[in-house]
Length: 354
Image 1: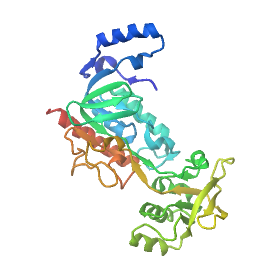
Image 2 (image 1 turned 60 degrees about the vertical axis):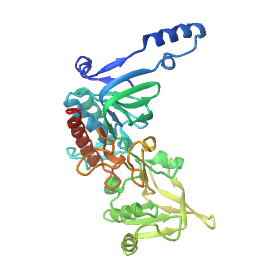
Image 3 (image 1 turned 90 degrees about the vertical axis):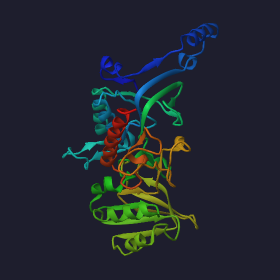
Image 4 (image 1 turned 45 degrees about the horizontal axis):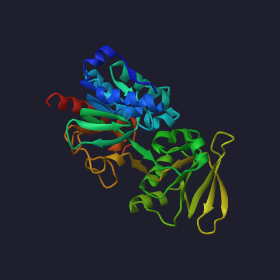
């Protein structure tokens, strides 16, 4: 996607420097004339210095960008591997305030994106290859570009763990979901399947009973991994039943464009059976997108970023975190946006005194 700058003249006042090494570039250009097949991108490394860089373009990252841009910080947003975050694969969003008639996930994120750009945020495509928070300014490497910043907001989110089925990919948003809290309403008086055996699976199953006719928990073992109190509650709920020692082998029916059944394989006998259902909720966990941050900032035992009490600052002063990358509990668009706002305010206060 192209770079987006709302007002280049205004934004330029807040960009500190763009350093170009002319000697290196000229030498590279001369060399490229000899061999004729080296791209400009590979010939040079650009170094750009900013007030604030935001990693991630989901609700947290874009909300942070809106607030930071309105504070005249001209933030740079690096979109990452999934521009717009997980909401871009969500059909109807009915629980985000201000949209009584619902809005699609892509529409909501597009609106946030355009709002951030309108106030002076710059958004670029690219994947962060490495970071260095051990010195100031902080360093963010994206492909062959080196970005430096006085402050950083990490809003890289968390990735839902999926089953890896081709049918699953094609039916996401058409009966397959990774968020019961988001989508349970659409399955009123229907039969649904929850895949998993941990706390998330049972919490999702119990939440779904408020809407669904029957919830079947499919688990590959004959005992659950969830905490005892959640097990007791789920097993005593008349609207929850269990399919033990089973894995989902396939989800039907891609041809119809909706979920009609799941194909189950017994882990011992390998026998295949089919169970009719109207929806499948995959609840086998989330993985925070913090792989590049290991050894850089404090993470908890699950890999989520640890932030200080009553603030979004991490263990490194000047580095802040927002959204699902630091929230293993709520995982909602509205809470991500809220922490994005908090992180931007914290970053603004930090930048005003450094």
